[in-house]
Image (cartoon, rainbow, N blue to C red):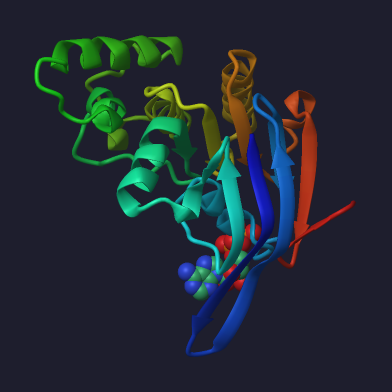
Length: 221
Ligand SMILES: Nc1ncnc2c1ncn2[C@@H]1O[C@H](COP(=O)(O)OP(=O)(O)O)[C@@H](O)[C@H]1O
Ligand SMILES: [Mg+2]
């Protein structure tokens, strides 16, 4: 379903060029649960952003289904991201001035006449993630685990085919980390493709495959 063919990504700056990804070849099946591991700076975030259609590689090709994602124009690539990709960040990235309910509704946009339906849907996901009592709370008023649960609700509200998570448990205590891993497993159980960068071991029992990155390359452990 997702194919990376000879993906290279270089970052050039005043200090020279960093090769963040070097010749990555990967094939990810629909409904796979993949864990990505590797030392800091090995290219994990770059790889996730590339898969999510958010960062154009220097060379190589990313295809999702029959689409060559970086050959699409910006408008079509934005639509691909909006409809098919859900992203979960290590630092949650909730909007501080919006309630949890409003944060979760954010990806739905403001479609005239859909407001009521959107709110119902956001409530549904927040309830499922045990945040039913926190709908009107602001991010600063809830715990880290609750913030990450809200961020997961926001990532899945449009029912994306692929959920990408970048160290989603990196800032959580063990109990919350295990819970987040469980939610990612639920998304996988329901047919989603899940790709998670993590140093923790919580996702390993659910993983179909563990991919190791080192210096921008996929290595065999
Ligand atoms: N926007 C950027 N500009 C310059 N260098 C970058 C940028 N993003 C990442 N890099 C470099 O690319 C390499 C891989 O980074 P990253 O994908 O963030 O690694 P990881 O997520 O595994 O820690 C690192 O050497 C990093 O410094
Ligand atoms: Mg990273």
